[in-house]
Amino acid sequence: MIRKLPRLESKILKEMWLACSESAAKALKEMINKEVKVSSTSLKIMLLNEIPKILNPEEVSITIFLLHLKNSIQGVILLSSPLKDILKMADIFLKKEIGYFKGLSDENLPVLKELANILFGYFINTIQKLLNTTYNFSEPFLSVNPFRVIEDFGFGSIYKEEIYGLVFSTTFEIPEEKIEQKIVLVFKSDDIDKILDLVSEKIKLEIS
Image (cartoon, rainbow, N blue to C red):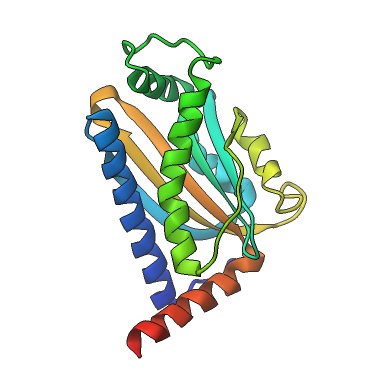
């Protein structure tokens, strides 16, 4: 059964996620000198096997960079984009004409991983402050299968069991180049109470 998040804690988590998304968009705008919009953000508890619908429900050539967050509260964070859009980002970062790159290659993969690292960094730093913890993580790894990538979360047999997660998502748009990218952060449902307790403690400290 899907549980509901407490109203106040949910409000704080949503505000945190929106503020972090806007900061990441601003930083990306400064890096590429193009308008970057946060077109949507969301927070909900949902079945993990429904996450591919968030990553991109209609695009088959999806490209995903995934990073594990390892600590007592474990999570994963993903950058998801249609292949044509992620290749446009490589064109921009490597100062090529839009359409120069026709596929992923040894030339553009390093800069795309660095892009993922930069965007992930804004969200990870905020989460670490909110949860008063420090995460260990390695460099992002690439996947092109949104249905297979969630098996790599390490959260269990998501296609055999009803496994829920606390799922944050943000959609970024670069209107000038018609680029869309999504950042998704997932925590396993077993850790939701830990997260809410830490947020509640933060609320108490701010009130006192």
